[in-house]
Length: 477
Image (cartoon, rainbow, N blue to C red; front, side, top):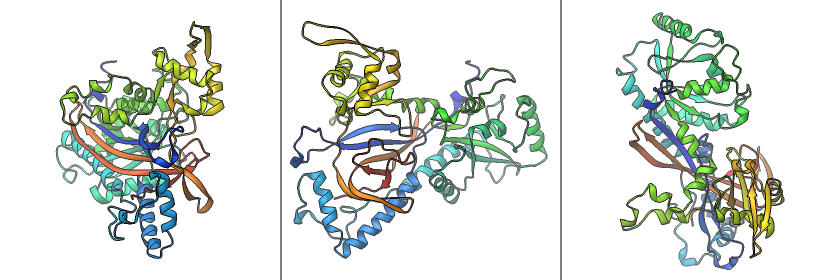
């Protein structure tokens, strides 16, 4: 196993992450006092989507708000929504000149500049390290490319294509799009040096991999274009449905889990991965919950208590309540479960699995029923507190404090048709990019744009691709 992972250990790590937030005020707080705090919903480390479309939507909303504000038809609408957040109507002396969009208006998102730049940096670092001569000087038969791993029948191609086009327009980097099944057929790992080579379609799936590598080299010698993959960008691979062939990865010709075999082949290579396996796992809800434990953040900021402005308290202030449901559950975690089961607290929590993409959480009565199904009350102590045992099935979930953002009036449009108008809530996603070496040196780390999703206030889930929310834009007041 150590030998099989030797090339992966030399690879750079590329992260295109999105941290999602909501404004939150507990239901017990006064609605007239404002008092909203910014709380993190989750961190997405794989398939952090809609950066390109969100930038286009923000440009559209920026134009519309400027244009309609000149006619005076938008003021009442904006002031109503501003007061929903602040708890009071905007004062006249708070208003700024119409031309000062930096202080009031829809901000510009730099996503389609910064996301391609981070990917181009990872590509260039690979090229300098392994392809020492410039691309123009290399034989025409070898071309470095970036691989986008996508779902078959992908419905979010427009957002992905925006990133692909900017990679070419700004950096001259070509992209190849393949599903995991296509990766299994067309991408081969050179076991001598860890490079990923992209062959022509239609090769024999059962052909010996070493023979295929020899065939590729022979093809290359004949000056037929052979593409070497520098960066693997996963826009698929995060859901069980991305692996329809099953889990059989036995090392013989009868193995049927071709998507898992393809994923393993990519992961074992020297190409930079976005995300790497470590980054992918870091996006699990369980990691988010563990980071909220007392004393855990301090491990990553050992000298924080000596800083003039300590970072740890600021970070922790953005955490919602997060509770373990596995063997590591402590008394505080169990008390949150009791709140749901015995104090009618199901409306104050969300049950979350280790999943991406939206549509898998439990709310309200479904949440309470799920906990009752997998919890056992063993006895009651002298203080009337129920002692409970959590079932093993709950270990794949965490319990999270439910957030209550301000409700604002909006008109939602989907597929070119007005879906309706009414009170809505929103979730802000902030993109960030990071490039790190195999040794852990961070060579790039920057904010990379935003995404705002808006849904009607009675809708629990929040995914855009899954049909629960629509793309929107923040308006700075």
